[in-house]
Length: 558
Image 1: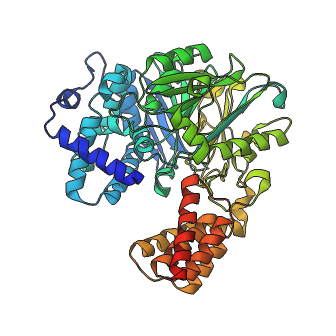
Image 2: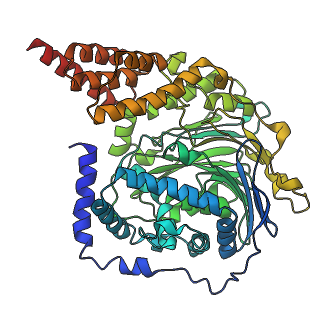
Image 3: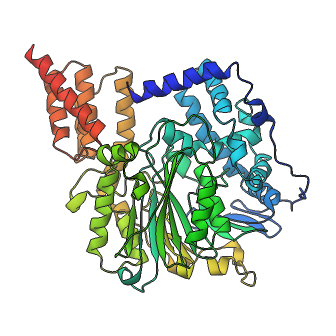
């Protein structure tokens, strides 16, 4: 059965059950007790059109287009200050995300079913999120947009959105989270200290990645930390704390879970705020119940190395490398705990995870000593194994040209480099956590980054190939829409489309699909055969191409 059909039946079946279920009442009525906190916060003041201040807290847009947010206080204060300072970004991000949902589910009736399903599905999430973070989310939700109150109350809506990453990749097994990470230390780096690099290839549309926030949080309890985030998000997908402990996440292969528990970004937030070393990070991860499979990549200045914590609803593993100073992670598990896991074996055999893992290995082997600049070059690499041209945007590449962000850490020095738009191609802006979190260090003009340590833009931005790729992305959307609408595509448009990204198998597969739909079976066969010669992303994609080669041949032979 096709994956989309399985998901539809799953949602519909559970929706029927929830219509008579009273199990959601407690979750809908649950709110954190905030009576112990002072809800008074400094009033937001406007310094200019991109800088806002509230007491010692502020948000400003730097010269490279990243928002820099600094917030301190107890959970309620942090939530309210974050909401107040980033309210416009919060509203923008919520609109981008939820409008996308409405675009995918245009029917008002189906939207109603979906809302009821999500209320039922998330009915136990509140039991698995620490009160501290529910309080912070509650404070944040006070500044949510009223535009989407028909979906859920602001607090529940923001709470549920923290599980969107988990729900998305569990229900659809998204290839949109094909992240790749690595660490190097000891004799594998220029100065012997730990370096970590990662691409966060979560894609929810171009608009979703436009307004990135680099948040610096100074909580009343736990460690100060930074993370790369977006409006309305307190969870962590990439971050480092003042002790030099880092966390990033890589999605694994999951069964469709029956109930939401702790969102993975909340688990990593807790690790970042309360762990100083690998042992403490493992202990925190062990005590939380998750509802999807995920690799938590943990780097530690204290331990001078990195490890993987591999979590799923029914299993837990820790992976450490032996006799080597490099650790690589894509989207499959490596610990003994998952050696016989069928989902993991399927991910290795059928997805592009192993290919990216091997490509990362190849690139690290080419560099005897890694530096931050070399780490960025590796994360930006667009080719396949043995430098093969596989087309721009191919999910087998480390740089799939869709990343929300890329990031490089030097934990022992408390340095972090964050990419800027577009994708990983813009400059990498540098932050020194020693200075950011030094109470004696003045935050001059609300600027937290270190301009002299910035890594330059990728020269690919200035090439014709980049212009062609951007043209390809637009044409791809337009052509797929015409195929869906059974429209006509001119021969010149087809030629332009092929020329825009001629090494990418998907170009020929899309054209083949169009020709087959129009009953031009010989042209379809030629297009699919051309696709088959190139680097096809996954086993299901390869099977699709092979199926249409055979179907086209049968049509021609009649």
